[in-house]
Image (cartoon, rainbow, N blue to C red; front, side):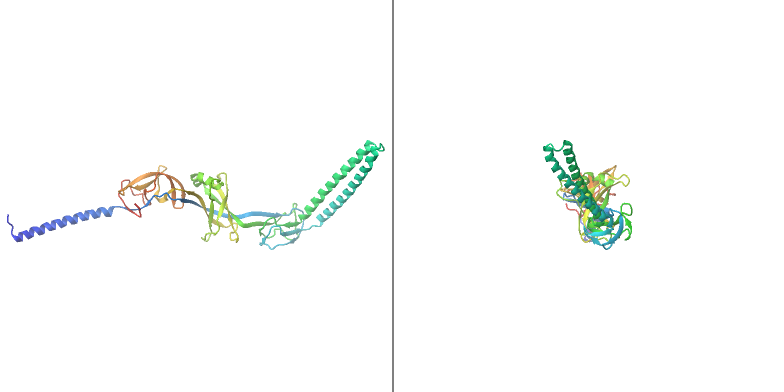
Length: 381
């Protein structure tokens, strides 16, 4: 049928409008689907080496704390150190009146000299009796008496030697020396005070701080969760080729430059505090760490090779079971139950349930139902 040219133009224009409207409607529908797809942060599972740390509140104590006590009675005569200063092992600290003890040494020495003279006489008497006995000029009783007298005299000499040694040792106690090197406290009694076991025996204290002991406690739940690892680490596992090093963060936020090593672990959990006690020995060459100071302890617990770890924010719990949200090749969500290990910082070790290459939703999984299509970001597919 013939259609006039103006009418053709009208029909063509109408068709174009219909096609444009249909295209616009299609594009609008496609855009609305894309905009509604949730965007999630994901990570690709790898089996890299994982260093496991734990962080705990610690209290610094002196490596060694020694009380200096008077071991003999007497008046305190002299103090030979500056209070609060660093002293060395063997240094003279105090002097207790030695007069009585010097007299005891002199008396013991005189008794020893006397016993030696008597023993020498008993020896000569025995030497005279024996020839006479052989010639029947002395009786058996005379010989027996001479032998007994000589043996008793020799025993007396040994007893006097012991008395002299005891007196000299006791005299030595009147000079009080430092048993270790370290920082000494102020004197406890004043000069002129009667000190000793029957009086005031404590004279001062010494703290050895060339190294310090840092005490900390692991909570019972954390200990139980990582029981096998922690026991091996804190009890000197001989199969391990590395050591359980610790680092300290001080109260001002600075990290102490020297690392320490865990050297003690309690054999049981304290029922009152519900914690597992441990301590570490840390070098303190510049004496910057002071006993009584608090610090944050970061302990190297374990190294797994290879080990899978995911962010703790990715792990959810349901009926005491842990699970994560994973994506398939079409970026559709699914739940995967996992067996978790110890936590370290923002991550947790996964012992089973995931494999290298899996894509895990790292956060904001609460609103994602299984089967949801998502738009991943920061994923390496």
